Amino acid sequence: MFYQAQTIRILSLLVLLTLSASGLSGCSTWLTGGFRDPDVQLVKVDVIKARLLEQQFLLRFRVDNPNDVSLPIRGLAYTVYLNDVKLATGESDTWFTVPALGRETFEVPVRTNLWRHMKYIVKLLEKPNEVIRYRLEGEVKTGLMFGKSVHLARNGEIIPGNYIPE
Image (cartoon, rainbow, N blue to C red; front, side):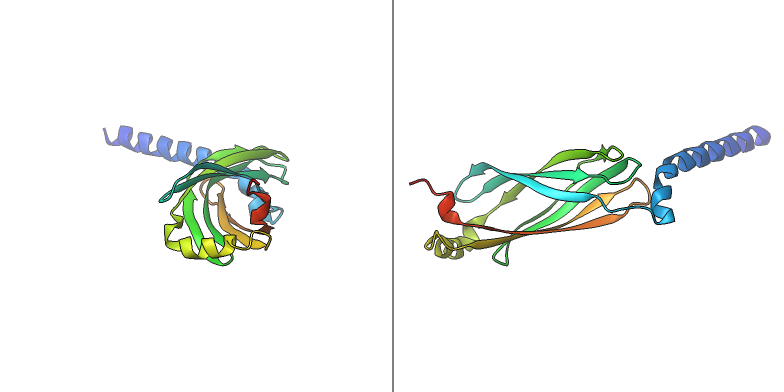
């Protein structure tokens, strides 16, 4: 009985070590210093619903993997600013894998409540031809067991008058 339990324990340990070794083989690029950060781009913002108390958007991102091993992605934490006013913050826990030297797109749903910023937004829209700055900050979580966080920062400008129908 004791011999059988010890044999099972040893076999379990061997299986665990084998799985860990095979799972870490793709991480050797990270450990040897050859890992290059993926390029994460915000490619599109879709308005899903725009109601008085709640707005829903869909942020579409593209991840380009410059490495010669596949790259597991475990999610994204993000914050969106409009002229340095925080509009939305959240986290996506979508898991996917970007192929070696490949690219993958993913979507992040965002919910906001602009009611508390209404005066500020109305003031911005009073001058529809003036530029409004936006900023997206985030952190992409990569890897399986021993991941690396890749920081993301994108800035841009929009002119509200370009989106207001005449």
